[in-house]
Length: 193
Image (cartoon, rainbow, N blue to C red):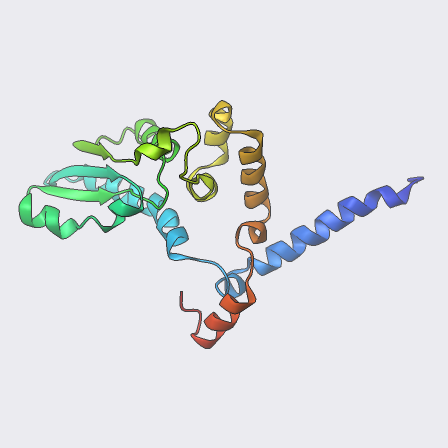
């Protein structure tokens, strides 16, 4: 038997915290404090990627423009493309806080799946290229990238960023800290975002 059972206490506390985290992240519970519009935007991109792959297979398709940008590019109108360039269709992969690592992540996905749109437009704020960038990459890091990408490009990230990524992925309530005000508001409005 284990001589110093008290050494199991940290593991026990970890398992309890992980269990509570998993319970709070059940779909019926988490909608009361998670799912911001920004988060939904990130989670929609794999769906958009699948739609793009299917569209590119069509024999009678229009030319395809893929747009990578930040939050300002989210409002770029598909109607504008339809009205002014009727032979083109837009697939907008822009996200809030879009940074070069996010674009690299998706371009690597395009290359791996042999997805070849007719044109790719990459639009980014110059601030993202400074050594002391004012653009915060937390949102892209947590919502937009996956572990294999982080591992492959680990030299690009600080140990603090990697630790933050792991903590946010392991404990979702660390990422989506429940706020009583948000929970009460959504209870009142039937889970409206």
